[in-house]
Structures are given as C-alpha cells and as structure tokens.
Length: 437
Image (cartoon, rainbow, N blue to C red; front, side, top):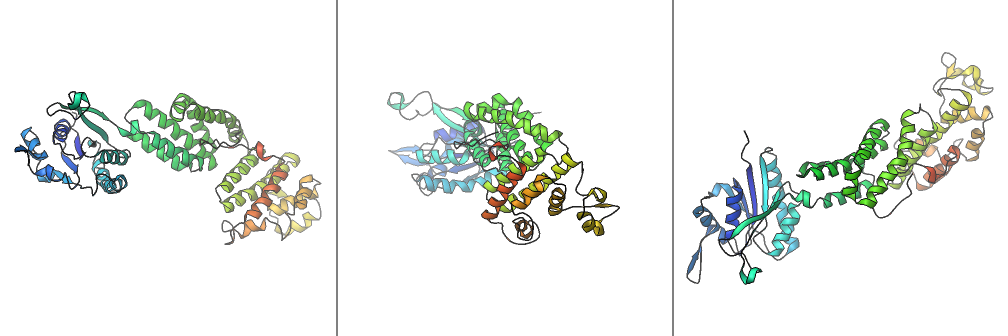
C-alpha cells in the first residue's frame, strides 16, 4: 500500500493569496512555512479591505477552498527586507535545519518549495538556498494573464505549471564542487559530494552521471592510499561509464579523464601484478610523494621519499643479487668487513638491514648505486635523510623544510634513474592542465 506523502511546503508570500492557496490545495501539505516580509505578513492570517472590497487572508481563502490550516500546522519565517538578496539568503539559511529535520523523519517526508509569491529578489534567494535542499521546486502560473498575456495571472486561472527536483536542474553546482575537490586531491571528499548529489537526484540519467563521478574519485582515492586492487576495480567502472562521464563533465574534460585513465591503467595493472619491492612500486611512491608536496604536506612527502630511496636499493639487491628481503640477509653472502661488523646482531646467520646498511652492502658488492648514494651525500650523520628521522612522522617533532624535500627529490629521481615527466600523474579536471601519463 502506497503511503500519502507527508509534505512540508515552504512558500514565499507576496500581495496575492491565490497562488499560495493553489499550491496548498495542489500539494496538500501537513505542515507549512510561510515566508513573508513585514509588508505581506498580515495577509497570511488577516483579511484586508481594498477599495471597499474585502480580500480574504491566505488562511481564510484556503479554508473557503476546502483546505483549513489550523495554527499548529504552520509557521511564519519573516524576512527583514525583500529587496536585499544577501540578507534574504542569510535569513533563509535558518530554515535549513527545519528541512533537514523534516526529511530525517523518513522516506515519506518530503519538502516542496514554492517561489511564486514575493519579490523577485525573494524568489531568487529561496531558489538559491533551496537548490541544495532535498526538495521539489513549485511555481504557480496560469493560462490567462492581464496586459495582453504579459501581466499577472488573472484570479481564478492559477495552476501549478511546473515542479522539478532542483538537484536535477542545478546539479552543475555539485559538479563544480566535485571538480574543485578532485583537483585538490581531496578524492574522498569529492566522492562524497557525488554520492550525496546522486541520492538526491530523481532522474535516472543524472544518477548514472554522478555515479560515474563517484567511481572516478574513489578510484584515485584508493590509489592514493596504495589500495591498488580496489582502485583497479573502480577504474574499470569508470571505463564502463564513459558516456555518462562525458555527459556530466563535457566532452573535453570527459575525454581527458578517459585518455588519462587508459594510460594509467598500464601502471596500475603492473602494480597489481608485481611482487614488491619492484620498480613499479618505486615509481608509484615517487608520484605519491610529488602529490603530497603539491599539497604542501612536506613531512608526508619526505616520508615517501625515504621509502623510495630504500626501495630502490631493495629492488637492486633482489633483481641483481637475488637477496629476496633486506629483513633477512644471509651473512655468508656478505663481503668483509661488513660480515664481521654485522655478526653481533645476526639471528640464525642472517641480519636485518636498514637503509644505510642496504646501500653499504651495495657498495661492498661493487654496485654503482652504492657509490651514487655517497655521491649524493646521503650517507653519514649529515645526510638529509636525517630530517625524516627528526620529523614528527618518524622520531622527532621537527617540520621538514622545502630545501630538504628538493634535495631528496633530486636524489631519489637520480637513484631510481627516472625523469619526473615519466612518472604516472593523475588527471586534472579544471582549466589548468598538467602533464598526464
């Protein structure tokens, strides 16, 4: 059995009661918020006289029309100045809590906003404010108007001519919010914007469009958190929603995202298949460090660069010398004098190596990386790597400087033997384009 909707009607009040009465009869609300100014507030509850003719109040006219509204079912939210847009917007914001509380009562509780009455400024203000509410817009018009069809609707000819979900019509606002957050690399927040908008949409095509945006943001959010398998699943959904993505972003931005997606899929697929540590993981860490730097999060960026530099050595030991893990290096394969130096800390004939030890081993094995490490000034107590150890993300409370990042960034690229332009980079949706790959 279908339940009758429990409707909250919010309507601006002008000088004529007929449109509001028509909206009341059409929507049959169980609760009403009238939004008048001081000049029109009296018309809600009190009759008036114009040129000897009695003009019934809104409540009186509604009662005559068969829709009595007792005092417990309506409230009045008076605006200070119906000609001040900024003030109207500020004062209408106070209704947001009422709307939220109403819809929280259940799926059957809905909100209708009628902006027929009042000044043009009031109509614009309530439209702007309500565009983010879970509501339906309503407007009362008519087939017959004064002034040869361009004046006001003639009394008795009013009808609800249009009602629409503002989220369907004004979804571009959510898209703009999504783009800003996405380009700031706030992927989870962007996904939440898309998800909320999708829930409020009525049209199925709009729901699909915002679902595509949600998949897009979740793909890069997962990738940014090194959850590569989850990212791969979401990116596949993005590819399957290509038309919806072009529809919501436009063909240029949509194609840009899809082209970037095709390039990045190769990197992501390699990451999902590679057994760490691998060169693919090194490139991913470098790209992640760059994104953290661009956000101004230098401590996070340097923590990743430290791991990059360590991983480069681990990959070399694994691929060139068949050392599977630096956590368990057999001493009988370590050249002297390092074997003797590490003997005291060995466990069952194997030693665990830190970053400095790993490069020392590469140097003892005659690998060029060992010499490059020293050439970059990364060994010893004055190494810029010590800044990571003093960072609040490691063992200290110091903040990492931009100079330290620049030094380690240059060193990490050199040790990894990679150019910055070759790193995988996420797409940018705004007008300022960056290299993608």
